[in-house]
Amino acid sequence: MVYEYLKYKFDRDGYVVINNFLTKKEVEDLRTAGEKLTVNPPVDSKTVFTTNQTKREANSYFMDSADTIGFFYEKNALDENKRLLVDPTVALNKVGHALHRLHPVFEACTYSEKVTNICRALGLVRPLVVQSMYIYKNPGIGGKVDEHQDSTFLFTEPDSLVGFWIALDDAKIENGCLWIIPGSHKTVDLQKRFIRNPNICAVDEPMVFQGTNSEYDQSLYVPVAVDKSSLVLLHGRVVHKSEKNKSQFSRHAYTFHVFDEGVSQYSEQNWLQTKVGFKQLYGQKSQNN
Ligand SMILES: O=C(O)CCC(=O)C(=O)O
Ligand SMILES: [Fe+2]
Image (cartoon, rainbow, N blue to C red):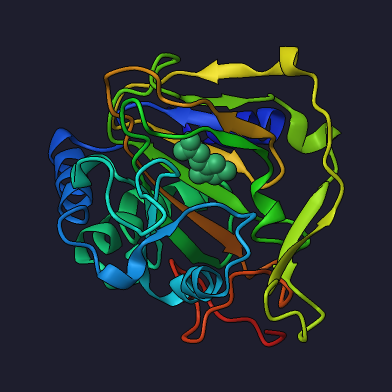
């Protein structure tokens, strides 16, 4: 794809698909690394991924995962005693959020020339990577992702968030591909923020949603069915979701988010805060930062 066209489409639709972004070997390396992560995850990791979760232990595990590799299970994968109800290879919902810093295979992909070229094509001045996730959405058990805007979780002022979503399997309607409302980054303001609770006494609720739940016209969604190795770029405000994987085919993906520190600031209120700093893809640190 011609890179000027890429920026044009991204600005117009709030997302853009780049087919064949990775080579077959690069996809295989990422997928193999993702599969290896399912072998013997640490025992303290048995927390089910849900952003409504209030349990203290799970909350701190989730918050700490900004700087670690955390393991999050599917809702139906564990019983109340945290015993696995399914095969470990299909039990995880996702792994995150510092794969790009702590795992060589994901680091190589994230800090690659291919990614740098995309950031330059989008005109990013000083892109920093804030988080990364391996998303499994395994057959039969992979849950749905409710509709949302990514800037809800990773707010910058002004909004400069870009999501990189790389398909490691063919992602089709049957196995829970992304659904996006084209142009919604322009027509919908940021509806909600997911932040650290300003009330620090609320120890059982260290993270809270601020804002309203919006009703979106469901007929505006388009399925973004892509082949494996495709990259989907997502604007921080574009509304998207994915359905449960009811098929027998897995739908693995590697995803990470960048923002442009050259033109914006990462909010200190965001749930995700790093203790070690975000690593840039390129660019000079400006005097103001
Ligand atoms: O993989 C999915 O189903 C959703 C991922 C997502 O929302 C994201 O990467 O921003
Ligand atoms: Fe998202």
